[in-house]
Length: 442
Image (cartoon, rainbow, N blue to C red; front, top):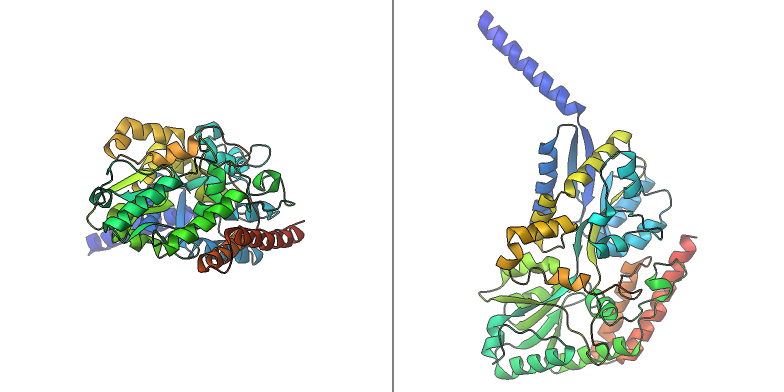
């Protein structure tokens, strides 16, 4: 009886001690926008950090789409119910930078908490996009991507094309697509996600064409859109023409939800979308071998295309939390930057390795040699020296402007507007959105 009482008391003491240890841990809440396999991998990273130390617990909370997560974070901040960390997509960067008093810049967070922080260790195109005019990094790079081209090697071969050679120029995309459709190897030449991000923003960057004034918005709120040039208008006209001829199939507005199935089923031989689509493409391709290549360009506009621009998201730290939570966030960011963590995330998802060390680790591991095409995105976004036209775009309320682009592109696709009329209208309407944002954030 005494022995039983002693054992019971010891068990109770153990539970009490465990509870006190758990209570001593500081919780750091992380709102994010990643569902499915990406969300599962994200939680695995958080669990890895939690298991690596006993002072903090990072708790990931899925809040819906990127736009929904940003909207939720803004509303929560106003109600003083914000998380310590929120994942914000790249088009929300201008909005976050303009949110005076809401953001705890990551470079300051790391310095205040004595965490190692070397901006030179990150990929330059990544840190350049998320830095202020003084070069200070404002948010923690996490899932950065850039668009690439995927193609069906089996369809290429069936159409009489070389299965190992992807089209380099838009003229070749048209030529290859005609051969594919006319041969019956597939019913469509190509499709694409994100007409705004890929076929307008990246198109402009690759051809070294301005997307807006003031260094594509990096220079301040008084910027205006200027993506209604001859090349952009010509490209929209071409997409509409190729659509009527059955060479191109529109994937839909926004991210283009209809585009992936068109490629997975073999209906379309070429698919342009984020490098982060790699895992999904490989998993869902219906029994065919996938090839990877850079985005095409118009060789009569530019002989050597510039770098593509960034997509994905970063982690922003919000003001109004405790010093302990900020210490936990800083420690988590240090963990997140470790080469092993970043290399694993990059190799699983197709997102870029955010640090040079993670890329070099992948090279030593033989990952890129064993997985041909997995370094296409890195090579494309780091080629040459970025110009003011190719370092990225930073505009307030860019999500709304992208919606306008989709609407105007669909008008061109329907034949109610020419490409020039479409981009002119998108610029005019987009500039109204910029003026509203400027007035609200003066």
